[in-house]
Length: 168
Image (cartoon, rainbow, N blue to C red; front, side):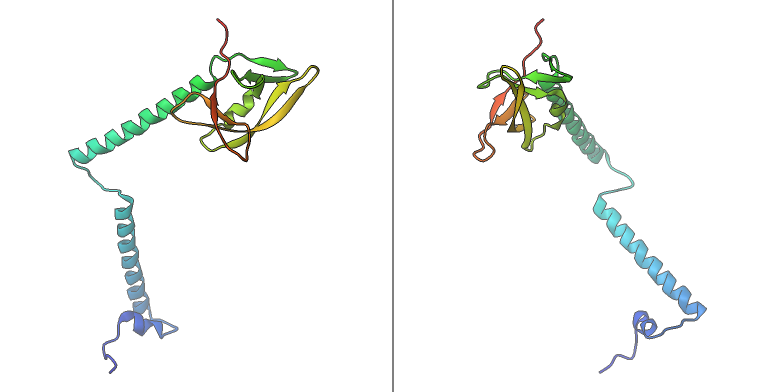
């Protein structure tokens, strides 16, 4: 049995031209659906017009934790490369690593590439007459001011090294 009562969508979907009244009805219906959808999305985003005191305190506490975490990460990052001995070879400037198998140097500009994800970065070492380079896998951790280096990119084993401090 076919239902005698058709919905607006069924009735208007069969037509190709509409009267002015039908256009108004359709536009109102679409506008209503758009508003309902916007309200649903706004609810999912967590945007509320007003918050009670407990919610405000919880949000402020979370923001404060994020701020402190960011400050600590920046402090460790700054401690990792601040007040370090600078070496110049030609026009390039380098920092020197301590306690490695030989004297390895890293370009100061490469220090900006450090992240938690391992990256292949070139380190330099001196021979009698020139500066040679070798690629290493390097990463940092947010809890440490050391730079973690793996000598081999295939058999990965990270060891923490620090840069040489300035003599004062």
